[in-house]
Length: 106
Image (cartoon, rainbow, N blue to C red):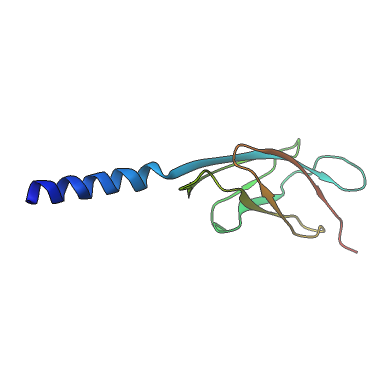
């Protein structure tokens, strides 16, 4: 009986571990009007504020995260913050690449 219970616990642990998915999203952040890339934009997964990245000199960003995905990887909700620009939230499909346009504050 102990052997069967142990095997059931191990099987359940493997099942739930296998349900996690690795999310990777990337893209470029540009100024809405000029179309020029924006450097040093703070980019992070909405649910992980402390795990942020910044865009490089070409406006490029890439974020990695592990997420529960019993029926596939969900889209990642990504937040973009930059001084003098409006904060923007965008849903990006796992594995997706997106061009994000930020609007200057008035």
